[in-house]
Image (tube, rainbow, N blue to C red; front, side, top):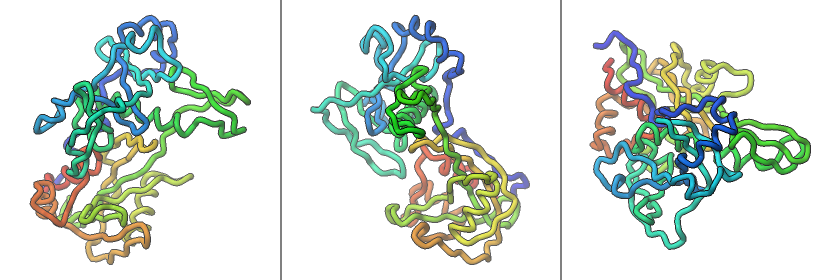
Length: 333
């Protein structure tokens, strides 16, 4: 029996990043323009998809996939107005610009999040994949680059007009700020904190059962841990306690931090926690939010990860929920 509280056994898929993204790099206009000719560029479409080598995603298992970047000079002699600087890696600058697959693109089936196959556009030897379903397939550098590109894309899409006067905005600082052309107000990328908590029973150090729930809009048999947004004036631990109580009617204690992962859908960061509760406490799913909640044993959870439990479809590998549940399953009580 383990005497040590479980910890994450791996870095969450979208927390992997190798690029240097210091503010000083993107603030140096002369440096960025001088290095543009040797830079690499990601194309990201309006759905957040970007090209990767199709042969890489057809390999089973698919891991460590690189992005299908373009040479910057193939885009233009200098960074276009809608380009966003993502960072530097191995003495190469990386950028993102809007793009899209050709109109005559074919489709290819790729295994995505929750083990569900997804159709992706396919053209010129590349499949256009999206971060939510396929981020875990990418190599560390590519995962970090696409996560940043998707976060900036979503922020710009929602920040086209000034929050003060409603005027249109223009981009500044190579994608890292906007300015209202009417009143001059500047805005910077925002992140909304959200907690995600693995609740287990109080048997032993790590418990013998984990509390899982499902939303009404999810496909049948899909379950995960509970999550919710941090409210104004609320601590992270306070949010964990409130969200669990609101969603399933269970009071928790011994709240402790596990790790974090950016989740740019549209602009969240998921802050992972663990907590304990009495397994005898009645579960009361929140009407309209939680369709079902149940206790799942460690053996049942392991069977779900192995694909041997038809009544339990677990979070995909891109989500921090997957890493949390896997760490708990491997820890023992």
